[in-house]
Amino acid sequence: MPGAIDTSYTFTATDVITSTKMNNILDQSIMTATAVIGSTLSVTTGKLFVTAGGITSNELAANAVTTTAILDANVTTAKIADSNVTTAKIADSNVTTAKILDANVTTAKILDANVTTAKILDANVTAPKLSGAQTGTAPIFGVRAWVVFDMTKNAAGSTNSDNTTRYIPTGGSGNVTSVTKTASGSFTVAFTTALPSVNYSYVGSGEDNDSAGEVLIARPNAGTKTTSSIALKSKNLGGASENFPEVSLIFIG
Image 1 (tube, helix red, strand yellow):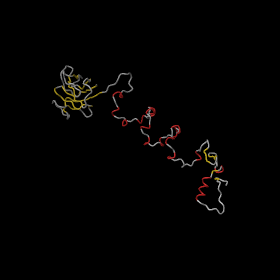
Image 2: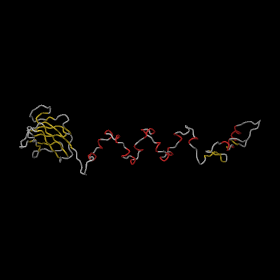
Image 3: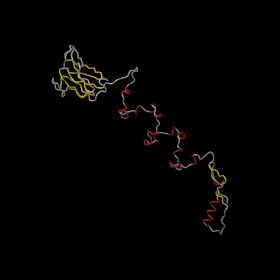
């Protein structure tokens, strides 16, 4: 019978339709060329084939292509246009470290605004990374500790000459726990965190008690110098020990 399906069996007017006859009809049926409209599909020896040009996008229903119908292996980089990869189309949860090649993370691809303090671990801020855009190639070394204190006042800020902890104003120190007066002009600086080596350098100055402006900082012969504390003296220009209202010290090394 001509039409979309061709079969070698034809029912007669008195024929009884049985399941066997129906199965035979289906097994023997072939498609005819008139069953296909358009050029994408063709019928060859009763079978349906996709032509060399393939099925075009306008021949597919919008809901015909589902995620489950596309194999993961068929989604390759070459098949995705760069213009189709937008931020809105990529879920944040899908951007994992494992999916980003190290070679693809370049300076040009990281906005300055995205490099925030919160995103830099303290452990990643090392001494070599503190060097800035200075000229030359000599290294830069930071201050390990510093303090400003008053030799004429106790820790509470009251004026006295006792051999006790001296007054450090609020915000007047870094990595210094205390400064303790041991004698006139003599004091010991205690570090909060020990310095890495005992061979550190120190320098100091201060506010004089008169208009001469001389405040000398020195370490007494065989005075204590460890990674956790140091004993120093404050003297005037004449070499006499003196308690000054302001002594400023920095430690490097």
